[in-house]
Image 1 (tube, rainbow, N blue to C red):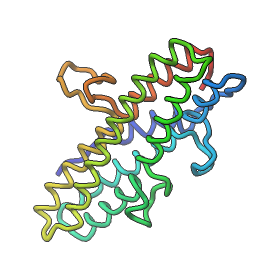
Image 2 (image 1 turned 120 degrees about the vertical axis):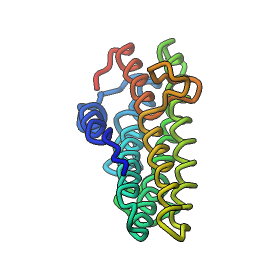
Image 3 (image 1 turned 180 degrees about the vertical axis):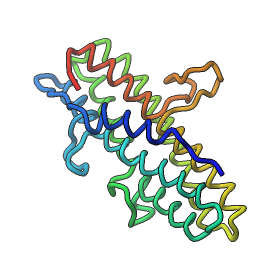
Image 4 (image 1 turned 30 degrees about the vertical axis):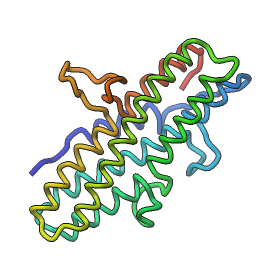
Length: 219
């Protein structure tokens, strides 16, 4: 039985950096306003969190429940329940109920892409914003692609007639949701980068951190 032990460490990581940490006070600049929407606050998210922290919270739920599905390998109904929870966290339009925020990882990540793009295109955008925006966008797109693939695996679990087939898809689901969160070392060089589709939400956050530092902003 697989037990994906990255989750507790990642919850600590997210709690300290994006979800539970201090958010930046951003004002006086068009680029900074859009950066604030990515990392600090956006009007239609739950509790008006930033779009990237919202994506992180939904991604954590998706990864956790994919893990729960793997660990319930002898109980098909429980595996299907957790697959539904993953669907809800990734896209609540597909699954109305679940333990996620009700906003959706894909919607939050897509919104973050839109606002970091606006930041990079602003007339007052610095070279640091323009350069790292490319890295953030690539990482978010990789997270969205893996999350979209995860929905296919979740659907397959729900359609499965036995635990053997469901577990096959649950294992893939856990890998994909972890990759959306952490990124994937595709070229096996011992590190995860923003390029070559390796990135995920953690890498997007890393490059948002570079932007904040370059702009003299604080988390």
